Length: 407
Image (cartoon, rainbow, N blue to C red):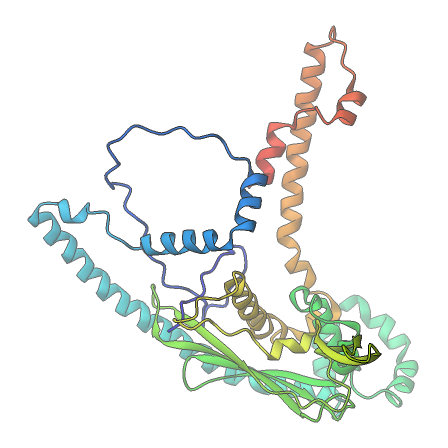
């Protein structure tokens, strides 16, 4: 079985269930006995030299990682050194904790069932949305009144005749899903200009729960010149057993094979390369296909390493985590609030945290300015050439600013 993905980024919002919550290994006890020898002082090694050393010795890095991994979860001997009566109490607490874990697993199962219950209620709304987006029907007067802002009423009524003329030539909402995806930050970075031409044919994005823990994302397309698939899906699977805290543990994802039409594969590009014949010395130009960036690589997810695979890329865990988070963003953000992403209104909620951080920086900057004024009053007799300090790079950074960067 593959190792669960560890959630490295605490600031990334995760859906209630299914969750990407790993089973964390217990840390080594702080009561481990220290070696009874004097400390050995070594010459300091700056970061640049250390990085260069590791870059030249990938085997050394692999060996160190292996050694550190073997230490995780190993007993320090502290528990074994306790009296028998104390160890008995520790075992009793573990038994209570196991009962707690059973209730946590039951809680997560019931939450998942509740999500499925309300998803069944959401589904007719998503289906109604799809018919309006694709021009199969028009919204009712009550739907329009419910969604219209009060200040828009007069403006919209004044342009009623113009709207009727537009509706006679424009069906539905063109490029609805493409626009929504381009406003969703995590997805926008994946969409290239070439992808946009294909994503214009996207008619709907929906999801469904699996019989086992997991979910499937389904992208519906109208007939297009790029591929013959009417729908392309990606399925996220979770492990059968629950993790620490009763949460579901992400296992792997599988994507649909895209049936690209001739010379329309957006996940590769054509490069021309010269080849020289060793015997005749003649050269010829051949065309080769090489992988390239594309949103459609999303349907060819990275696979977790097997237990006997010792040649895994160092960034595989990060790639797996990013791939999972993209699926969660589509499931929990894009699909439920597609109209807010289309209009861009959802961006204000995404950027709220950044605005708060900026306000905090502004407050600290003001405090720094006050401190600078006090320093100037105390050092009026000192001749300081500020311009030369900035050019030489010798001015010291303010303590407050340094602390902000670390937070």
